[in-house]
Image (cartoon, rainbow, N blue to C red):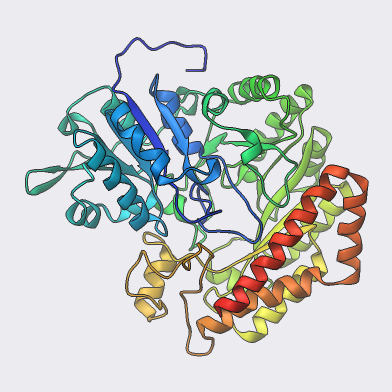
Length: 486
């Protein structure tokens, strides 16, 4: 089904909400982790937009990116019959409070929560929070659609609900194999979102992100959505379907300078990504995607020739043992060759690293910093392990006594929404892990060659200069805030 098909079914008036929380907090960050980043960054709330696309005349509000306050949200309670909240582990308690405020304004409001946190902790969610009427299990698109059609909760497959004093499960819903059955999200973006609110430190601004598929072949121990919702079978929309949506978005959003495909790893399916690239080349759009550091040079050539500008690459560590511990499935020698191929072809890389995964020591921290400087991606992000319930890493941390918090919803971020270290090892404390992020950033960026490269980029484009000056100010504020939090 695409944007041109009509639905005749009568639906309940539904509000899809990413609740306001910490200032500058990316609550809709999707498959990786939710936090306030080193520069102001927001990802599109694609999962919520997908739901809104299935429910005619519904409303989508992205609280964080839109700058909404709770006082601005509460009046929506009386305008709607159903509230669907996209939640995350760091924001769960806040999101419960927001939902409670809307329930108080409209006691008849039917409230459902979706997202990885409640998939794993459905029992605690419904037991401890009476304002929440149901919780969605795993891939929840058509589950939500049926609720909004007005079906009794007991008749909707794929949810947990409260029946008196009992919590009942209606059974697992099959994952979606034909991804073309999902409607486009971009018309919902057009109706409810402003692309200028969505930006980050490495994409052209404004950018737009969409999914071409779900699932990830990789088995990274920390990665949330493949382990809780979307699985490890990578399912994709047809190339024709994707290309038509990109064409619609290109024409509907002339201000958008870059399209980002937010699949966990678009390059997992070489045949698919090459075919897609050739269609995108015909459209003349600039695009980027997530990639593993093992894409063959021939494939990179096809992608680059057809509009690829940037790859978001999860290197994570410069130590092979740590990569093996996290089940990354990438060898350092392959990653080095891949990176050199990208440099040769002019493909920009934003490199992602994690400090503090199992096996980390002071020596491996320095090894990873040296590795990052050697391969030299254009920009980097350095994160702490996000130990979310439902992941192998979370279970591993509990089993080994590494987790430094008693409540799963506490400790992942501080009072401002900045990521905190929650893992601690006998040989490496959580404070040492936390401090390593700042050391990494400084040693990578505060080099004459890197500073010169970024300066040249600024003077080539006035828009880039304006943005990087703003981001530089935010970056130093981020470092200052970490120093004061330590």
